[in-house]
Image (tube, rainbow, N blue to C red; front, side, top):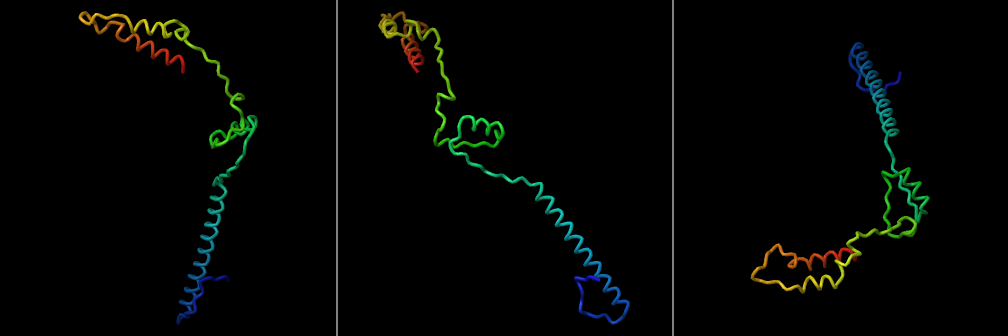
Length: 146
């Protein structure tokens, strides 16, 4: 029989020898069983673990990028240090300005007119539009230009 834990100690009685041999065989069988179970667990764990593979695609076309994005959108990373697709292929800008931006209220003549209105300091009301009107229209002019 197969015995991994054979001892060189010889007990004095036959019963002790038989008992020693049984213990060695049980220990060997238990060891082999635990070894097999450990190996099965290791194989099972290894089969379940996900392995991440990084693939670098240099300068993809817009079609290729779209295909990659549809398949790997959660893990896709783009360092964007060089752009291979021109902006005109992916962005179309058609600005739509508010009607105030084409009115006379943001022209320099109107702002000059508001700023040069005489204000009587004795009857000055903090709610008088002439106090803040020039600044307000200058800000609107700036917003419309950007």
